[in-house]
Length: 338
Image (cartoon, rainbow, N blue to C red; front, side, top):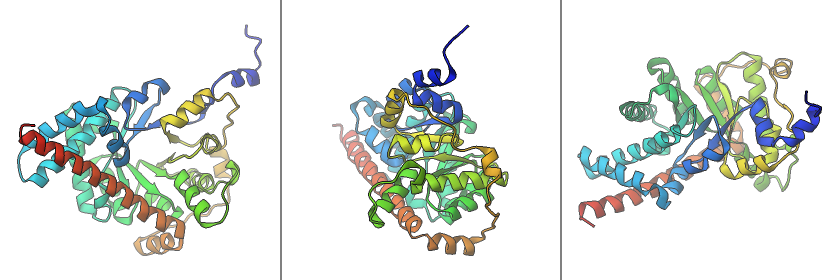
């Protein structure tokens, strides 16, 4: 019989292992070799992470295979590049799925963020590529920007096609409410980027975890979802420090970079469950409904969210273009026999 007290046992356990008792831990990386060590349930990728990974020598074989696929599919140069990009994103997803028992999130091109039909078409294309590789749609989350058009694309993919969606670049309460009303599977509110904005625009350079504006935003969204029984789950994302992560212990899921996962694995402080369904149900939040006009107005009233959504779309689009440029150069080399 063990004589170690529960408190002492918690102190012996890493913060990461304690966190896993309250929250599903997800790895936020395209570097699937970094996943093994931390045993996450799921993994998320985005254009910036795929660009970084695609530059690593360890993953050149995936880039080469995708280019070969794109050329073989034929069509115009633009179509060959598009097919190569789709194949590359799915190839990284397939490798990640060998390392995690759960799901991988694969992102739709940010340049489609204001085109609902094109987002739906691209999502179905990605799901078809996973299916060709023997992976069912239940193991894939399609990431879409949380614009009004993106949220409605998510609604259509979930309702008509049974495709699970991860709504990303989420900064405002209005975005969260609209996502819940669209019955999407999951949202990814960006904790760190909210903090970044407040540091840049309020004159304050530091925030304790309990007053961190990103933490407070996710806590409010979690409480709203749980109080009113929405099926959409919350996955905090874009963390700047382990304090933010620990302040959201109890959230449905948290997606965390390998660097912060490493810190949490070496941290032996006690991690308490901060977000709880019972506390959420006791909150004084009131239910609201947002049609398109009300959504656009409420989101527009949140200067931080407006600026960070626009900035996030631009940055993901820019990294997508950089990846495309790299693909084009390599493709030209292959065609010229270099």
